[in-house]
Length: 445
Image (cartoon, rainbow, N blue to C red; front, side):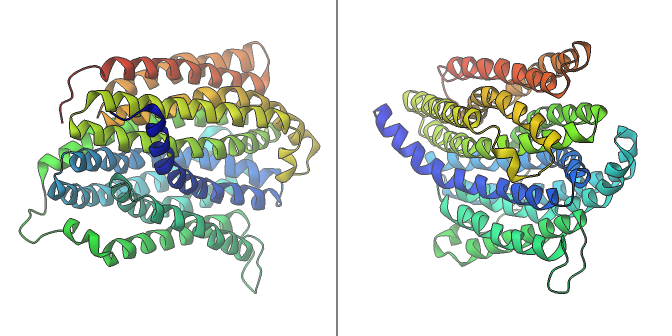
């Protein structure tokens, strides 16, 4: 049996490239916010509103692709290579269908943004930006399909390299299209939307080329003798992906609704919220790497039928996430007054954002723990109960508490953030207890 020291090393080895890759994804959003912030607080507020709503929809498809990783990891651990390839091909079918459905939802929803009762100028700027992000779902989902498969086989470096390199293109496209450099039209916020679409398209193309050029992946490509539709595998993907996407939806929906509530207060608090959530997202993405590593390592141990190693892999992921977020939280407290200046020079926005960063420092620890908890439970294919726990934590604890503190006790945006922290704390505890109980049982795969 491996020692915990060995588990920590192997988890970090997997998590580091995934975390860097996740950071690469979120840094595109950070760069967008930094550059859009130069246009003023109203475009930044519109970006905050749209990003919250967009990810609310995107995670439904994202959850479908995430289902590929544990299925591939379990098949790999059980030495069923042929099943790995079938999961990839059937996952591609699910991914494409999901992508087009989600694009339709975004394009339809963009026509009704005025119903959210946001400042008129913010709504006006948000409509076309929302539509452009919607179109980027198709290349994003294709990239995710191949990324989740490759990471399920523990080949984590190529997606990381592509995600990091993509930031160079995203910055360049933003520079061209937001501000109208090199003779291009100055599109403002819409320029950031076009930059995102172009960058995601390049990412998808690059990873697909890598997959089809690498000789060792030939055995995973579709064999003509295989059925085009495999109902059993599709059912497995959907049975994991739909609850996973729903759980993510419930979480993002809570944060999106919090953004809407903050919008009721005004565009200045909404811009401050965008800054603080952007900073918090950077650290959160690094922990998602540990959570993904937990899914891979737990899934592989499940495929091998080893309960002891499954538990060690899972608790290692949870402990590493807790520790890393604790460090990030301390750093955020020390630099809370400096970080907002990277985004904007509006004194009122900076003052509010600095307070929100302190609150974020505390809920970081719970956020990291719940992310790892979800990751290791996915490795066990345990996704339905976590979905129920997510509903309870975010919609029975977080949102009501946010509303009461924010409006009844007149704590404003700070009160709303404290309510979100309460929800994160509750789900973090519940998920750790859930993994401890479920991982003791006999493993079926």
